Amino acid sequence: MKQLGYYNGKIAPLDEICVPMCDRGCYFGDGVYEAALSENGVIYLLDEHIERFYESAKQLLIKLNHSKNDLKDLLNSLLERLDDTNLMVYWQVTRGTAPRSHFFPDGDSNLWVMITPQTMWDCAKPFDLILHEDLRHQICNIKTLNLAVNIMILEKARQAGCHEAVLHRNGFVTECTRSNISIISNGVFRTSPADNLILPGISRARLMIHSKKLGIPVEETQVAVDELFKADEVITSSSGAFCVPVRSIDGVSVGGKAPDVLSRLRDSILDEYRSIVNR
Image (cartoon, rainbow, N blue to C red):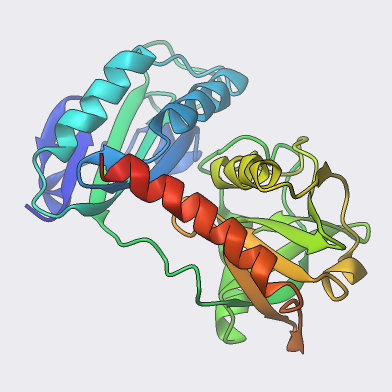
């Protein structure tokens, strides 16, 4: 089997799973999600993803029906049904199934899982970005299903022949539509503070840990938009592309001034990944 779906206990090929129209995820986007790479039957940084998943659900007052350990066991057991070894494991919880009403319904939440083939992005291949004002809401730290604005802005980037859009508010960078963004400037790894305006990325956190391990100072401080164009390196990070250099923003070349530092950082996190998934 190449793809697998799960919905509240039902397990089947992904195209055979049906979801009720009254699932609140369908008409309100009322839920939270996570996604993590898996290789050789190992879900990379699963504990960190589970913790963020439960924290996002807690902030939206969604009650989960599974304990953290039960959810981990479920995800791992589903992996065993797949033929491929390189996979993306996506899971989400919605508030439940009920007639459309803004009031919270009684009853259990709904757990979805989708597992599909995916190979980690080659982090040596750089990205091109565009700049775009951050038009999203004020709870960007929750991994909510409501991604309409992100999707619209990402489509603008695609039409411009780019991989991503870097968002900004009041002259300062926040994050990208589906990844975090950081810079290396004067030997310092800098990234936006983990407040309500960015998602506290799992890969972002690992990059900070590996920077410190390599003796690279780390600062969680606001990064001005114009600093992107002066930085030694600009880096995006996500669960499918841990440490990808940015080549251009709005057609202007950026980064490329500290390739040795970037290479050491990228190799460090990739070595950790390989050591975990090849155990």
